[in-house]
Length: 239
Image (cartoon, rainbow, N blue to C red; front, top):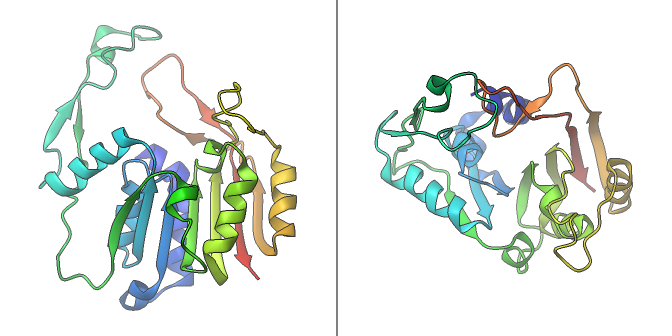
């Protein structure tokens, strides 16, 4: 919950303020690339939006499918996520402690007016045939998964409607920085912002590194070692 709060809370607040009438949100189509296990997708669907998540990892897709389609109640299953973490433990009790999931019941009514879907595959390939389709695109801990982040920006510009909203939050831990892919580039945040502006986006917010409230990601709260991210956050509109 603490991780979700640090990563999702401001995005959720912005969308609630912009679209205060929950009854009319079903016409707003939201795309979430890098959807992972689908929690943000699910959260926004419960808020009334029509949402599609896109995910490349087959492991993420299989797990999200299990949670979203097979889990029927809260705390239905139990796992031991830290059992193989042999370093930085204060005690065996910490290392062997279980975690129950899901923390909420994921079942939603079949007669809801809004749409809920997941698309599988590489973001660039999955969105190849879309043009000005989406009202909102949300990228959280995503843009640094690109071989070339400029390709992501170009695709987002192509598939977002004019007047559409792009919300981004995350670090720049470029996944291909070790040279695994030809053509991989690692740009600083400033250069990314400048390119987005050149692609005819107007920035409403550009906030950098809230060091008083760093984001947590895949964090073991009881470990001696915890990773924190001072993330870039921006909100922009396609002109």
